[in-house]
Structures are given as C-alpha cells and as structure tokens.
Image (cartoon, rainbow, N blue to C red; front, top):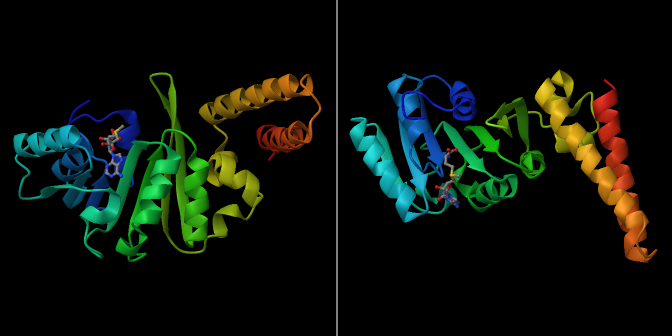
Length: 238
Ligand code: SAM
C-alpha cells in the first residue's frame, strides 16, 4: 500500500469522500488516505491528525514526498482537537477499534457542526459507533463490510439526518450490533463473521451452563441466549 494504491479497506473509505471536500483524517499514521484523496482530486485539501510522534513524522514525510504540503496540513493532537469547528467537510477515522473511534467522536463533538460527513472504519466493535451516531442524531447512510488479508473490516458512513431511517426494517438492537445496511445486503463476509460469532457465543454458553449455577452465571446465560437468538434471526431471516 502507498499513497497511489491504497488497501481495499482504505480505498473503500476514500470512495465515500465527497468530491472537493476538505477532509480531516484522524489517526492518519502514514497519511496515505489524505494523500491519495488529494492526488486523485477527491478532496481539495486535508488535515492529517496524529497523536503519536512516530506516525506524525511518517505523515509529515509522506506529505512532503508527495509534494502536497500546500494541500495537506499535518497536525499533532488528540482526536478532533486538531481541527477548527467548520474546517472540514468530511471526517475519516480508520483502522482503530469501534470504542476508540466512538470515544474520539464523543470527546471532540464540540468540533463538529453536524454538517460533516463521517466516514468511520472500525476493525472491531462497530456497535459502539452506531450507538454514538444514534445518540447524537446522525443518520447512517451506508455501510460496507469487507475482508482483506483474512481480516474483516466495516465502513460506516453517516450524516446529519433521520437517525431512525436506517433501522426501519430491523430492530434497533439487531441493527446496532450487525449494521442495518449490512443485514439487508447480507453478503458472504457478513454471513461468515456473524456465523463465527454465533458459534463463539454458543461455545461460551455451553461452558457457563456447565459451571456453578450462580445468579451471575444465570444472568450471563440469559444475555448469551438473547444474543444467540438475535444473531440467528439476522443470519436466517430477512
Ligand atoms: N488511519 C490509518 C489506517 O487506517 O491505516 C492508520 C491506522 S493506525 C492502526 C491508528 C493510528 O491512530 C495510530 O497511528 C495512532 O497513533 C492514531 N491514534 C490513536 N488514537 C488517536 C487519537 N486519539 N487521536 C489521534 N490519533 C490517534
């Protein structure tokens, strides 16, 4: 991967950048995504935010090497603190866990006008992001699930709008967990991921069933049974 040829994962994120947008890529690391987006005339400019020294240096070097110093501003800071309110039309946060992405959004929400498109790519636990988006009144407008090098990734795209629209034909609990767009499309990667998760949940259920029958274990079994039912519903129907 480099600034000219992105991974399938980052390429998918790039496809959702609105043409001509100023983008803020938070946790940019090597800055391949903003460099690619500007070089391919998707973004008109970018802010590459990084909290850590090594990746920050790597982003600075990449931007200079690509001759994009006038278009991409590399800034050090925690999450959205690197942007001014209204400065970006699109925010990308990719390659982290869903809880960290949700935390970055929550901690920096005063930097968002609500007009930005959010393009979020969690490696795991996308549910935390969907919950945050719902709480903050964002509408999910699209989702992608893909596999690359044996790993499964999700991309969530959100904008200000009707937060309930995406969940019209799925329960909010199931939709938050697996993704309403992904549940509708139900592609092979989706089915593989949630079939494995169902199997894993079943295994834990069986282990706890054989353990002591404490109140805590009974409660855990109820939670696991609910989760299995929900996953079976998503995998088998609709
Ligand atoms: N976005 C790139 C990608 O998808 O390939 C890099 C992902 S890398 C695994 C995660 C990067 O996020 C690291 O470089 C890390 O330093 C940075 N990071 C983690 N927490 C951050 C935060 N709160 N604010 C800014 N950057 C952060």
